[in-house]
Length: 506
Image 1 (spheres, rainbow, N blue to C red):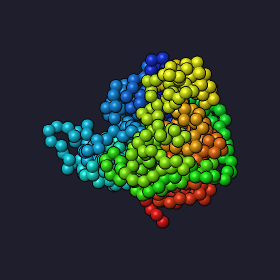
Image 2 (image 1 turned 30 degrees about the vertical axis):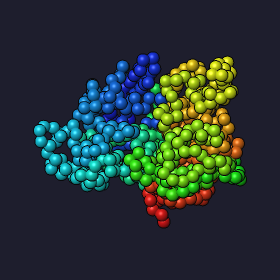
Image 3 (image 1 turned 90 degrees about the horizontal axis):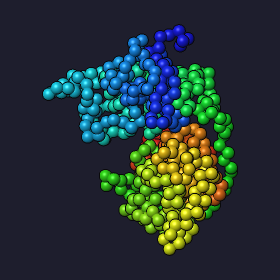
Image 4 (image 1 turned 90 degrees about the vertical axis):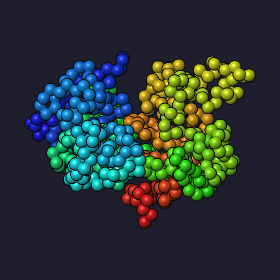
């Protein structure tokens, strides 16, 4: 039994404050040799904070850490690495213009001094690649690599520093199914070699696949610990949110109506002036959700930006309710009754330094409903924002609270409230639950289904295949700016979708 073994890591009564917020409250956590331990919890549960303390990014305010039986005072990540702890964050810390080998030796003995001993470093790197099955060209520039390949570089970077405790924060967030499978093979080979892994994830099915043991955090405290073989996805979801979640999504059978969004022969360039959409065609009807699957960077962002009026295409036409959409004009999209839910709620969706109320009326503050001759109707705006805060269960200190004080799930609710209050005919939902916990995801999914029942047509752009399968009436896969295939939601197979996502037609 695990209790009889000596823990590799022992975090005892860890407490961490950020001003008046308690991120970790008396948390004790252990990691044993040769195991993959999953750390689960809602947004803000304290998972990443706890691991940042173990990696030396933050100092804890109370508590002790023991690594391999010795008390560890970790003043920086350098101290953690010296004790064999490595951490791969959700956003990789790589230099795009440098080679794989150069990225790996930065900060090591091989990378110090006047002359880099790259020959010796390359030899060591190739031996690690062979040992762990992580084949990658040491001379390739990082910017030329896929997301999955960049993650391999991060893992090799940690192995090169001889870490035997690897922390992975949301490692599958941007991977295709085939890349996730490859990552899991790598993690299992690391454990077989005697290393241990801490796996932070929102994806419960993946946690069940990869972990030996699961620790659940809620509100900065440990609320449960389970052996993976002795729990279920449903139990874990309920433990995370502290209540019973719905058994299944209640999706009614509906007949699609007339077309509400028609995209014809659309071409667009990305930020590097390379083609990102190529002769792209799509039709979405009333009462249906069209799920668009694909690996990040295959044209999804550019498509959403063209629809939102943030990017002008080089060719093509778009109609909403048979009315042509004027390109490059967000106002035109709003006037044609398009609800726009961008993937980046903080940069594109909301103005974080404005109040919740100001964000709720942002798109229609100039309408006759809210102003006359330039004078704002304050009482009406207050009533309107209070009504939306109540209707969408937005957890906020009030309508005047700064938007940046809200959690990720509540930021998404503010954006949904604003976009759906106008009863749009078309809803473009791009990565609507990215980075959200299961409780917030359940809420967003219910709202999207309500829009479908009301008669809207919805384009759901998501890299989360579980989400695409759960919500979609039809599924298309985008690869290098082209639709690789289309299938009805009920007939879709993960294998076929995964092949299309990887660019394999048959």
